[in-house]
Length: 106
Image 1 (tube, rainbow, N blue to C red):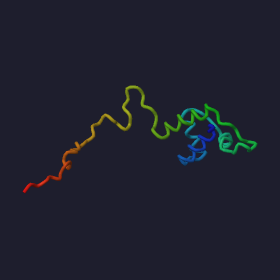
Image 2: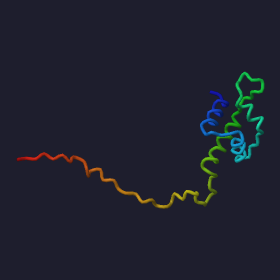
Image 3: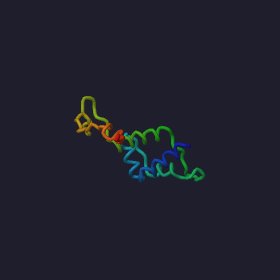
Image 4: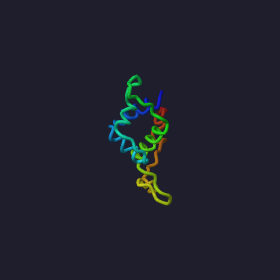
């Protein structure tokens, strides 16, 4: 499987348009034009087909992480989700319904 195939599959899986991909690449300061981008999604036998390099795919994946999760917090900052807050967890008592059938002796 080539980088172009991976790029295409990610594009379809995340329902991304060309403008979305350009914005995602801009998140990691990687500029690409719409025509350069469309060359990656062409068939291999097309005259304008361009092979997607490792650098482009790597930058897209890094940008996709930022797009989906948000930027990494700077050192000393708490993430936006605030995972340090305690959640109300209930203890599950699995012995409650275990071995309920009792044999009756007459």
